[in-house]
Length: 319
Picture 1 (tube, helix red, strand yellow):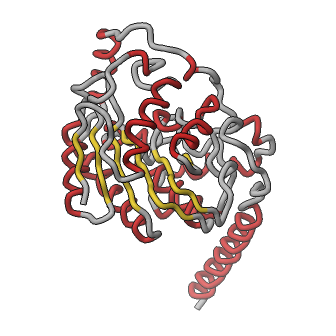
Picture 2 (cartoon, helix red, strand yellow):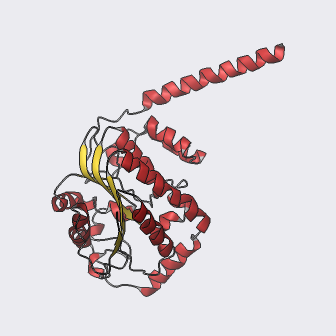
């Protein structure tokens, strides 16, 4: 009898504490939704997006997608694409799992979109540091209970949960969410350094793990279902690479081509070899302003308007 009473009291105590914790998290959730910053001011997604808005285009990706909104580039991209763009790309190597978190939150706030463009980097399919071990993609985002619960259900490690809880204490969001290195996209790569490219290839080759590829590839299906559930198209675009033998590129190319060939509302364009001129880059990975302009006009604009991209060497799949 005493044992049953103890168990009952322990369960009651636990439930009361869980209820108190849930109440506190609910209270702190959304405390900064009245802050609205521009892409020029902030790297945050939550502080830039509104709710119940319609966007013709949403971008997903890593820092190679985020540059489309840095240094005043966002206004240029919207002008070229002739409509509002929500850029949910995240610097710091935001992979497939972070992309799905941000896109899920975007839809949870009542926003809608016609066309999602995922600007693909092959390495995010192979490395945990870009996915559940990514400690960067929420460093500049206010606390939202929706996101916290998604981190739990998506099995993010406990240190990611605790680091996101620390965002509750942040007050100066304009300072903490600003881009730390403005002006990079104004520069130009002086030369294509084969030694640096080989060093980079070896670095990414060390992270090449086919078990991870099988794991993270399933996120493609999750993202596609999320997009289709919300009545939109999705197009995966393999961004240009100066390193054409990039580790994992063939596997990702095959996966996305097969996915696009069998799923309605899904398209894929392999642009890995399309832009090989150094004048379009500020380093060996990222477009500069000229490259963003060129790629947006000749690749993204035609895709959105259902035309064939005007880039050499492109291969595509759609249905």
